[in-house]
Length: 157
Image (cartoon, rainbow, N blue to C red; front, side, top):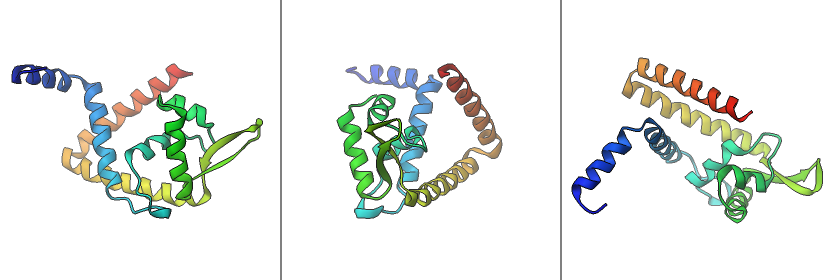
């Protein structure tokens, strides 16, 4: 894309896609919430790369290779993030009871409070954005996202 018209066309096409807007809004909401979080242990500041891991970690634990698959990145890239979060006391590596040679990545007990704090920060962010767009729009957005989520999860089963 070289000229201003090409850029304007691309921006118009991107803005016309609700999926593109959803991805961009998710990134912006995540950045807004992360900026409010305190520093973790070892002086670690949460980054978007860290929080991208959280929804993919099952509470009983998830293997590193599975995390990498779910995120679509290399095992090494996920391993680096897990190392940082383990040093900060957020994650643990524990033996997989199904395969003693393997390790599971799971949240530490201390992380429970960190996760609750993070969810509280996210709820504050949601409240601000709900007021900005209006409660009715926020409720409609929630209902639409919940329906989309349930559809996508059902398709995976």
